[in-house]
Length: 546
Image (cartoon, rainbow, N blue to C red; front, side, top):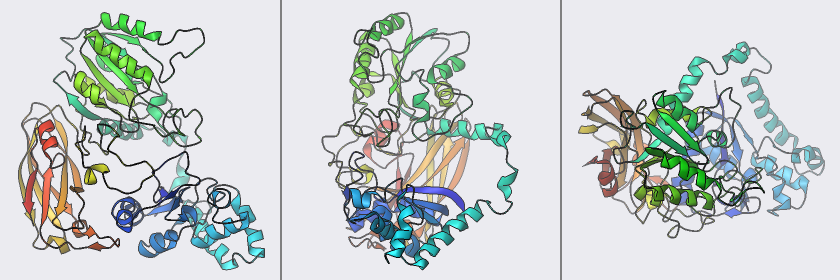
């Protein structure tokens, strides 16, 4: 049975929200097939998604919801059999903003004939007029209708299916919540730890929890979410994990971004309370970041930044003043960052005893934060993005070239590299054994032996990177496989990782995937094979040549 998941916003959508309704994203064939397409291809080929959504912008001159890629790539190259839907009111942009058509009937016809089966919006109510004008055929309409009714049959709208027996009691079951908790636990990334974590209850009796995201529900749920029957904020999770023998003090410290949240207060008036709280504590936990009101999608109510895009990597001014106040207190402090994207953590990396990147961890994600801080859960998350030191060396946001971007093409040293994350344990790779006589044609199996030499159960993510000696290869290295491994204290184990033959190929300027000429280096480790990762983690990446 097909999944009803949605590979949203195909395909070159990651640019400026403010101009997305008229913006044209231009990219080379190499960048298209090497960077922008692979994740969507995996969703179609491997996950068998039933629906794909087009983006608002144009790509290389064509509007995404009426693009030749919908047929040429998604259906013809990848064999997609589901339906394609527009983003909401995106087809209206064809004539109103992109100016690729002149009338609403032309816009509806263009989208339908290019392969957009379903319109989120009201443009397709004009399809009959388009038909009468000879802009679409009965066959065009029938093709889209067949695809959409196929999805309805799959969903069980006309026949009894496995879903018909589900009731509201099947929501938030014990099993559901266990999966949710595991997702929160494993997604949180420990970026720095000078030894202060996990918190020692024998040495710490009073903790002050400070920050605008400490007791916030909004920073748990992020953007696009349902309603939970229970929410656990970071403050509540810390209290639960600390238990009754420890005093937890709290101060909001500042508003998320407003210097004075109401007309009766003075600017930054909550800093005084934060100082009073810190003066009476042994340890400070600073919980800062963003929420959907600052970063999100264009049109979301309350976005404070440029239609949901951040102007830079800095925290809002209110929080920067709070950070300075915490540093000036002289108290040891741990920083928890709750945000959906990379922030400038340079000062915190220097001054904070530990830094925890919690993202938007879900309705009960505050419990995962508390459990990690007190050692009930061993952190094991790895960064899925690069944390840059600043934006001065990055290309313009409207530039879709990959030059200078992401770990594969980065030309400067990152603050925290892609794939990076610490744990409380000590796991080592003791040996790497490749298997396969012709990996570039048949793939490669790698046997990795590991040893947990620490005193606590530990999970690590073994990562495999490639670097081909070919002019078409990426500038640095590229991740091709990974797997999570958990070992008890003192335990040893083996894991086999498979690297498919397709991963050995490189993409040339024409967008073709080709077998590289010359050698290919394969690196296996707990992070990228660079000096920074080795210095920060103490883990050595292993390398061999095929």
